[in-house]
Length: 599
Image 1: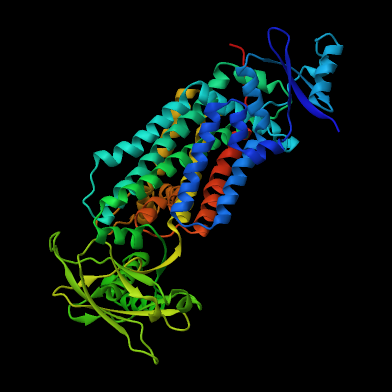
Image 2 (image 1 turned 135 degrees about the vertical axis):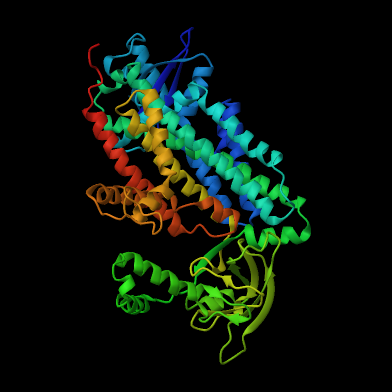
């Protein structure tokens, strides 16, 4: 069976034959095999990455089979990259590429070259997609080749080195500059929320910049001309650059995420024992958030609306505005709890039929956030009474606690208060001296353990990668038809628009942009411009809301779960639909663009 061998020659006539196929020995030995090739830097990097990942698994008491799986993954990566490592070793030893010869073994390949006097035949001269794994399907080898060239360009221009230095600086320096207050919440805000936000912003900006530069500069300096004359469609060039930048983003997110995870556990010992226990039970976990069943008030809204229509003083008012006011008043009755009274309706949570068995030996948490109609100061607090669970078999659990308004507070309850059918009934009483307002949504929630923190952290990083994929697509889209400075400006402008979802929502709610009544907050005349603006702004807000709804930073910093469903929805909506649509448009523009116009 013939294999392809790359022949390398040095200045004195010595030759080496490098096989281009998968190396089973490299797969078994992993980084040890790389050391045997005298590639000290690459082997050390692989060992450090493997040790860090195994350390993370060990710290979270992951079963031993995962350790074997990680070792196998690293071994597989070395085996697939064996050809590339051999090429590096040959080039660093003073050898240069000569040709690629199909032969039974390396000695035969060298002998075949010697038989023709050391001058390769024409069919031997082409290098067989160097660096591209042989297992890559032929249809995608061009895409992988462009991706590798994009990565090499990023390394060649020192972009990776500078970006990595900035990331490490942000991860290490930011927690040192901003001191936490000694609580578990403050600690998580510094080590998780601020740090992950800085990482996301830095990588987002660099993704836009690199995406604009790698395509626009290739067109401006005519490097792309040499590629387009080859039998490779332009859409594969566009896709290859996107894949190359995303491979770089995956590596950067993995490095930064590993450092953040390690610092989080290493510096947790600075907390006092009580706060350390709170950190481990409330933040370094993955807790699924459950909302209470919201009662439908549509029938009451229609009934009250019909009563008000009969009032002559209200007959001339906008029906939509009146209905909105009626709904707000009825919802206010369910949200406002007078002092010394129970809420009219209990909160009912459906945790699933097996919930009582799953949580009977563990704690679940009740989260509350309420407001007061009057200003009471930052240090004010209110007494709250609770009746949790209860039924025919046992009485309800009664509790009294004290929390302040306008902030999120939590307390633990035993999981055996859940009913057999998976329902948990929570009755709330306001024991303070003032009325409190508990929102129907996100006012009172139940948090249940769902997965280890390491899994939740990895899923959160996956969502961040989806955002970076969208930003990369935006940068490449702009560079498909604009010069580098203009493409960078347009990309940043689109990013600013993406951060302005509040303005878009306001235009949709008020019904337009012209002739807004300052008292009612709605337009007085539904003109054509207003109707068009509602359609445009409404669609833009829907898209932005779908993308921005996947925010893992706040969830990780508060111990809430970033579920597999959230990650799947982010991949489907952010990458599949949004980035995919932008990518298709960019590929079409680049394919139809004339890039060699005479000047």
